[in-house]
Image (cartoon, rainbow, N blue to C red; front, side):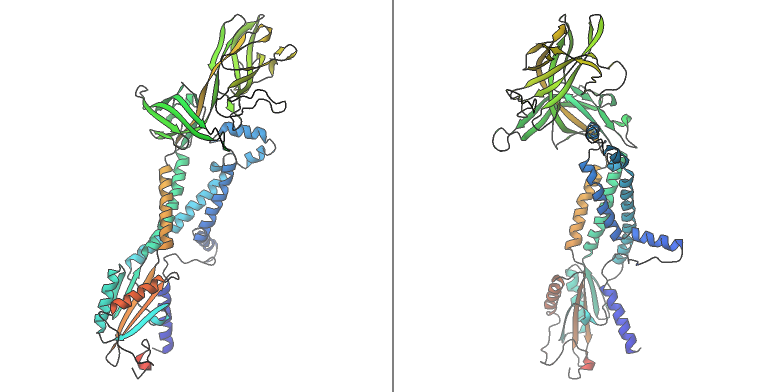
Length: 562
C-alpha cells in the first residue's frame, strides 16, 4: 500500500473518531429529482433542530397576545367589556382570533408543526443513539499525535501488560472499553446524549400534555355569596367552556358551601391598601351525597382539588343586602346583590332589578336601582370624581343609589346582563326637581318619591368568584417541563469524551506507550483525566529515562538512535 493510501486511511479513521455526536447529518439542499426529492428535502428541513428551535420561538411569540388580550375561554364577560371599550379594533381582533388565541388556526398550525418536527427529530436520533450504544468504541486512529491531548513514554514493561493495565484502569473510571491488538479504546459521557434526547422527549411530552388538556379539558366560573353554595352542574355555572372530549355531561360530581371570606389589607406605610390575605372558607362534598361535608380553604394560587377538578379563587367583592317595599309596605324584594369592583380600592358598581313590584295607579310597574358600593366611603364626593372608595377594606361602608321606574324588559324573553340596567323604557325618579339619589349607611332606608315605597340597606355580605377547572394534561405537561430541565442540565454539563491507549514494541526491545484523548467540546477535563491515567499507569508501565534529544513519540524507524 502506498504512502498516500496510508495517509488517506489514517485521515479517514481520525475523522470518524472525532465525530462524537449521534445527531443525523444535515442536508444542504434537496436530494433526488422531481417532487419526491423536494418532499424529502422539506421533511429533513422540518425535522432539523434549526427549524424546531424556530418553531419553538414562534410559539412563544404567538402566546404573547393570549397574555395581553382577555380570552373568551377564561373570562367571557371581560372580553365583552374589552370589546365595548375598544370598538375600533375589536372586529379586527375577532378576525385574527385574538380573543381565542390558543384555539386559533394559526396557533394550532405552529403547534402541530412543532409537534411533527420534534417527532421527526427524536425518532431517528434515538435509533442512531441506540446503535452507538450497541457498537464498540471506535478503534484508535493511526496517528494519535493528531489528537488535541496526547502523551507518550517508553517503558520496559511488556506491551500486553501495559494494555491490560490501561484497560483495567479505564474500566474503574466507568469508561466503555474495548481492547485488542495492543490498543485500548474507551468512551464515556453518554449521559450527554441521553440528556439531549430526554430534553427533546420532554418537550414532546410537554406539547402532548397541552394537546391533551386542550382536547379533554373544561372550565367554568361561578360567583358565590357568603352563605350560598354551588353544585357542579351546568345550570349553576355562570359560564362554561368545554372541549372536544369534555362537555357538560362530563362535569365531576361535587359541590361546596361558602361559609365565609377573609380579606386583609396593609393598613399603614407606603403599601397601604395592598392585599395581604384572601381566603375562602368552605365546606365541600365529593360525589353525589351532599351530606358528607369536609372543611376546606381556597386561597389565591392555592386551589382545592375535588375529584378530578380544581377550584381556584379568582376574585372577590361585596354584595349589599337590600330590601324593597311597595307603597303599601309590602316586601317585594329582598336579596344580597353582588356589586362588581372597578378599581383597586373596590369601588363597586351594581344594579337592583325589582321585577315583581306589582302595579301602581292600575299599571304594571318595575323598579330599577343602580349605584355604587363603597367599602370605605369619604365624607363628601368630589364634583369631578364621583363616588370613590378610599380603602378596599370595609372600614366605613356606604351605598349610593339612584332609582328608575318603568319596564325593565325582563319579561321579553331576551337575555340580559344582570349587572346592567336596560334604561330604554325606564324613567329616572325625581325628587324636588332633582335626580333622586341617596347615600345610605348599613341599616338606613330611603323613602322613594311619588309613593313608590322604600328601599333599605340592611347590610352587606362578601362574595367570591371561583373557577372550576378540569385539565387532565397538566401533570404530563409539568412532568415534561421538569424532565426537560433535567435533560438540559445533563446535555450542558456532561462531556462526551474518548481515550485511546496504544502499547507497541520497539526494535530496541522497549515498549512505546501512547495516550490520546478527544472531547466533543474544549475542556480541561479530558487533559486532567489523561494525566491521571498516565500517572496511574506508571505502576504497571513505568517510564524509562530518555536521552535529552529523544522524542518519546517518534517512530523508531525514523530515529535509529532509539
